[in-house]
Length: 198
Picture 1: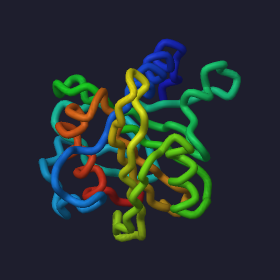
Picture 2: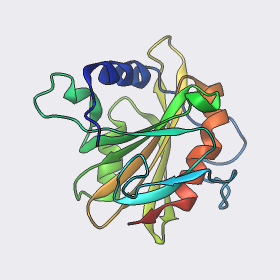
Picture 3: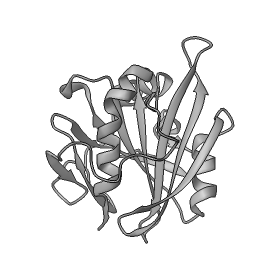
Picture 4: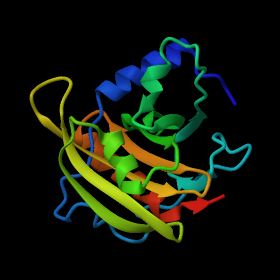
């Protein structure tokens, strides 16, 4: 595992400040197609896959995974924590021509709803939770809006969570803006539809 350096954490902070989210399609929140919308170019989660995780899932062509390991004494460690979750992996969309990340977060053994609610925080507006099957297990997805860090506009966001048996695993889609998120949504859906527990 690579240790997340100060530069990478600053990059993470900038990207977290620019999170966007869900597509502007006509589907109800959480009602994505059940089949992956694009083929997987690789699978991450196992040892040697770029990110070692309690789960595995497919990633889209060109997306680049990077293990995130946070040292407790790093003054920027708080940037890689949200609610009960700590960032474990970043999958960068930039090499695929998009601005954003899929991020994988791991946490404790709280309930799915409690964990996901704590992750999205008090700034989340109009959260819509949807029960889903993920890797053959009960999962929970959320679509919500959050005030932009750049202006007064609202940005759509999305995440899903599943209990791996070794703790909760959450995947969030963090994009530069809503247009980028619409372009990145198929990769997010691919991750959800292809996820298996290791």
